[in-house]
Image (cartoon, rainbow, N blue to C red; front, side, top):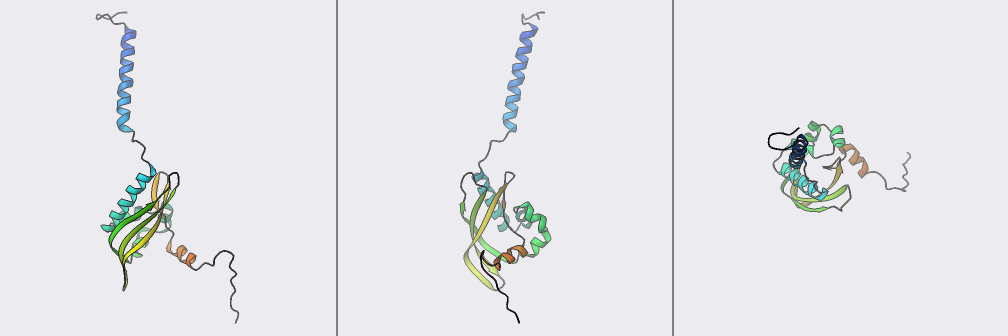
Length: 162
């Protein structure tokens, strides 16, 4: 069968198919985000975390912590423990090696805890990559306090008997 312009149905179908493929390829290019390397994602996340801290956005700050931490520490409990006041908060360094899923971050700030003030104090953090997203690693306060007083491996602990 031939259409008046001299094109066959087969030629029309091939042209339409090729056009459709080009259209799909063009549309897909706008929908697929280019892969961002983990180091860039980490820098973006840390910068957003610092901004949340500076603006006292507690909900945003809480969202940067690992999901496992947030499962154990409700937002209200997190907010109640925020007795550390910081000012002049800034990023000092990010230590990340390609291919790893952990990074060390150091922030600096002027801090005040009750009557104690510290100028330009380091805030050391560990960030972890989980499910393609970087999170601030933390343990609930009870666990971290136990770790402080835990004897070193191989240390014999004797209890006084009275």
